[in-house]
Image (cartoon, rainbow, N blue to C red; front, side, top):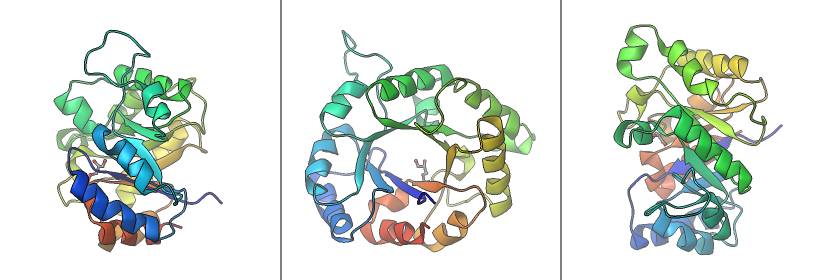
Length: 236
Ligand SMILES: O=C[C@H](O)COP(=O)(O)O
């Protein structure tokens, strides 16, 4: 059985000092290749060097949908591959909310990752109003529609209801099980589906025991080595 994935997303947090204090602790802990950290671009190469003797993978949090050219400020998938990056988060709810990114943009980014040999993690999730009005499945189905035709196994999906992201309010085990089953039914049963939203050391074991959970995408708790390690240890 493939081990559950644990992916840390540092978002726009950190500094050289912070990277130098957290990552060596992960390197010393003999984690497997099922663990990854997605850092802000400026720290990706430093992370690669700090983790060079470990199996922990290094990722980015976004990528350009374009391959090369006059796109000021953008970073291409081939550049990320060039510096040793292994995975990329695409379509995160914060990209959708603060940068007006659509599912179509995210799907183009996902394809750019596949072309460069990177493993993309495509995020979906409903907001509080969409959940309250019972439209959550409809929203997720629309977000998944852009993945039609893409090869299963070369990417993962992260279910991250935005009402659970950074709020301390985690989705219930029933909600997680229902949505993961829905995503697998909509795409393909073999699709790896991660849960994200207020995962911490104290609730990781419960979340990772839910049916259909193939891993977790961790925000705030990934900034503390001890907390992140506790989550890694709960992966089966
Ligand atoms: O990418 C990670 C998610 O947005 C979850 O963030 P969080 O663990 O801080 O709630």
